[in-house]
Image (cartoon, rainbow over all chains, first blue to last red; front, side, top):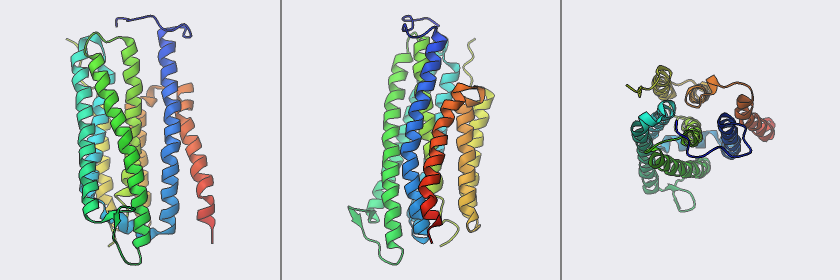
Length: 214
Length: 91
């Protein structure tokens, strides 16, 4: 692969540079794990305190949209992993289209999430803005929806950042990609897969509980 | 001709992930009591493991990369363990 410039002086080789970048993105992912980990801990604590409320809250979420979004995100991750795998100057065009496809799937996810949010608003399930649920489980359901909106909104923000990254890389990789671009794409891909992993757990915690009971 | 096709492990992981998604949604509707949460989180962990091993290439990594990738999980374990201790044991 052609080189646009030599590696920076702190590195012994291109391999050393790429290895450092990979370790660096894993450190960043560790901080992100703890960000979402704190939210998931809060979720477990309140689910432990209000089990029926959380089951009822979960039943109010749109499982069809949630499942479709999970499939969309898994497919998007697959496209990015594919792009990383075949990356070379000869495949620049295909890599570009794979990244655009992955970013478009990311946008589909955001749009479906928006539709879901508007449905929940119509059903008066947005704590702090319009929450009108009565009954013995109302407090638990409200706590569930507080955590639901905070975690999914922070996740959606990560998605938007990821979509911008993928589109930027698609534009850059279009012509004469170098090993530096491959390293950048590899780092962005690790981030994108991590956002996918977060969603896998959010899906299991938000959409699946309480489905077998009524 | 340049090979642009995705490697088989990637396709396998993608199809496996979609199959696990279908399985977890189906099992969520089977009454298993407390087992539903265990099943959902177990399948979620397997899916996350597939993404980490194949998509994030950890299967091909050794040594320091695995330590760096595992560090986040290690601290997450401490966070969840110490954080939930009080609430789980409170009478």
